Length: 173
Image 1 (cartoon, rainbow, N blue to C red):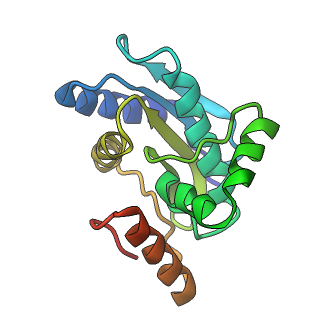
Image 2 (cartoon, rainbow, N blue to C red):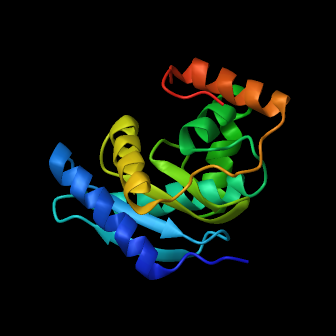
Image 3 (spheres, rainbow, N blue to C red):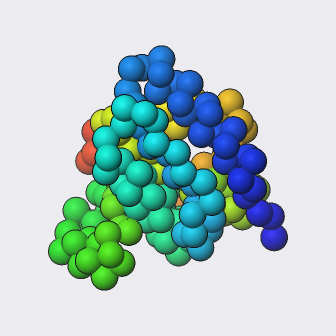
């Protein structure tokens, strides 16, 4: 079993901050292990006071749901899955976990091959801005947000339908 190390998380955080500075959008970044426990957290000086908690919740949510199913490659997919099926469940889960469940863009799992080794959450920009920062940082540090195991056709179809409903046109499985 591979393990995501704090030193790796700091490199990811540094890359997110680099892009956030370029975009003029102060954020907080959280990285958790596959079980949802915090590994690293940073709040940029001008980021909102609630953004660290939101970043942690995004990362925790991705870890919780991605470890259960290949249907959740990122926070936006999780959000639309709940909207489509049971929005009240999302609210209930947030209450049951003391606010640790927050389905939104700016969060994704971290994979090494087929193994999920953690997840991250970025908070402070729009979901799309947080996603841009994440894509930049993932590319810079070499983190994969998808498993090397190919999802079956039904899962691919379902995720692509969720992306279409969310208006996400730059991704397809």
